[in-house]
Image 1 (cartoon, rainbow, N blue to C red):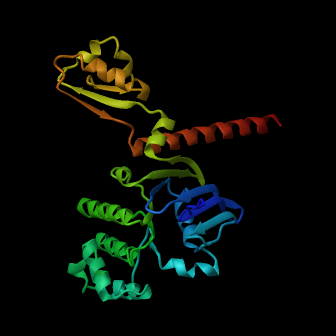
Image 2: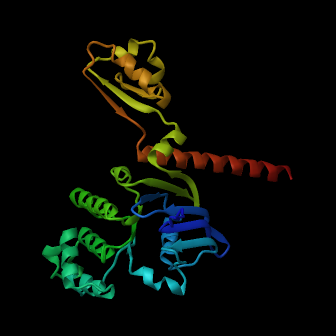
Image 3: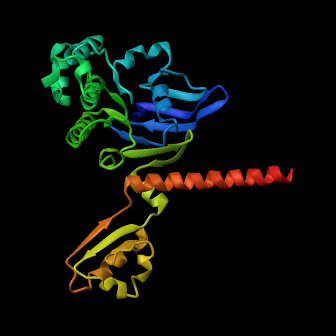
Length: 322
């Protein structure tokens, strides 16, 4: 007998749209998020990222399309049991100013069925245990953000929704945050992470989704996005003192760079170029970098802007002829 085992995604969106009045905020969104997967959600202000998170949380309902979170519609009466398994950090976090950090996290922990020991462990984890007896009104912006992370981590959530989680955090706290995300991922937690601070994010996500004006303009692993964008690889040679400028085989790769030792090479010509460089006897080292997340993000946004500009030009021309 053959068992037919089906795999259900933790989060599933099918052709989801959201309108406010007659204005569409999200259009045709498809998303599948599996257990233990980290999705980076990127886009300009007003692109629809926060609206998508609210739909997944069940705070608002879609205008059309279907959403499932842990097998149920998040805005339904049946969704109460899964809400305790979700952690959420909003972009603008706020707490009762008169309460201490300890009182805030203890109260929120009890709502999810956890005790004071759990609350203290969370405060230690995010680095504010030293100030847990102080009122929140005395906390700096960075400390408030750490407190927000503590409440998002309550109960070892199966799904984490993080909206600009590193805002206000110093570099050390940011590194600690991503270390925690990696640990939660290894424990099976799924994460949707929105951020405008792209450097440093890419090594902590499995896939990226870029949205603009409520539409998905690119989605996939960084490898998939790089292949789609076909951006050049940056190759820097050390120890050649400008000799590459005199190499007829390499002149075409200096078109977009002012450096005498940096080449911008198409992905498909990368290996041939490396072999060519290895023939230089004075070569000391080679540094090679594919397009990073920030460059990919800028590329797809720029491409979308050009498409929209061309469409608007065609419409204006047609209207002018009518």
